[in-house]
Image (cartoon, rainbow, N blue to C red):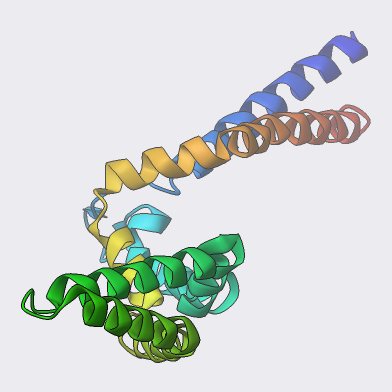
Length: 200
């Protein structure tokens, strides 16, 4: 009889713990819009909907400072043969531009000499000029392209339902573990309470 009562109290504790944690998990997002409690000045709203702007700003700052920056993007591009490809494409475009823009009245021998001379200059100077332009572009991008602001704007632009869906997709297992853990802890608390109560 004693053991049966303990199991019942443990089961009740498990149910209470599971339900409590399930409600707590739901209240991360729900209710999406503020609900005023009658006869009080209190409003109930999910944590993320209520703090979305602060959360979006914090995530944007973390992404910008800790995860990715314009320098990182350019560096990754150049790591994967991007530098060589860029230089090669620009050189070819310059050579084509020189060749196609020489007046047709110029004799072919002189045209060839001019093209060869221009191509030699391009081969010698283009890489340095391109990298200098890229460095300037990187500096300008770092100043004018604010990744933190882009991320913040994107998060704030999400519908709350979509934001909830994304969060649940990412943390579905962890949220389920929290709910189950509530049941497990509730069960043991129920057992402990039962032992205390039944022995008074």
